[in-house]
Length: 369
Image (cartoon, rainbow, N blue to C red):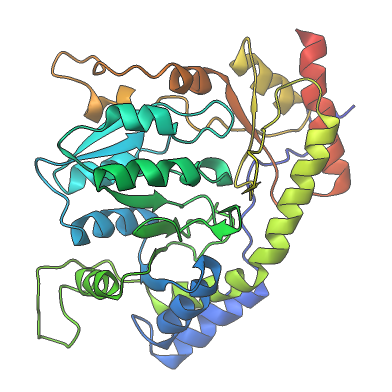
């Protein structure tokens, strides 16, 4: 058993190696540092991850969501169905275009939107559904897409945590009208910071390219009102290095998760839906009882952990009603997940002794209870 003074195994460990540094220096020396050949190459190469769709690089995953909703013309008077159990950016993007997020509950296994709850949340004002492929597990797109088709709704996939995840062989980002990815340093691959939008619609792709670059394709020939949400070539070059290693890292994450599944008996391990390819951005268990105490005990054994997300979006200050209270949302699985989830290290740099220490520490929680 490892004592309290042991080196802590962090819940995430971003990779920035010599290849990433060399790529950044190469671009800096070239003088082509914004919206140049590295961005174009990154877009083309990322397309292979999303079934050959058009890809548009932007400066963050949040920008990807924001620009997509802008390009679809979603705005004041519209509603977008989103999960409350997610990072706030999922709902923030809806508010940023003047639309209103409508929160639907999640499925207990995947932590992703429950299609039945989504169907019940649709109103005449609903314009889109935004499923979040949370923790790297694909949402139930086989059941969500028919809901959208029945009501004529756009589907914008928040795939910011799910690079390479798939359902029945179809990769996330290739189901809806658009998919949005993040390259923040803790993601399964990163570009220091950045985002990507995938779409099968060439007209939408062109609109997105205009929107990210002040509304212009040719300099000073502005066609629409746009923003400055471009990706730098330095970030794109780093992203290209990471993208090449993503398959290897993904398989290591999946192998790490398989080991933890087999060894952990002291908590509820993450289930995987039929035909789903989970890429384990997070390995998220459920802990009943005192979660804070569980985190302390894990830390004493040298195991870091994190809670994503302790406060559902509908309980965050910007989404409370005028009376300071959450709206009339019926989200029992969301509330339960927020009380119980705890994410353990699963990143590809873990060693076998570290994996064993993680499993041993989690199993000790059951003994302590």
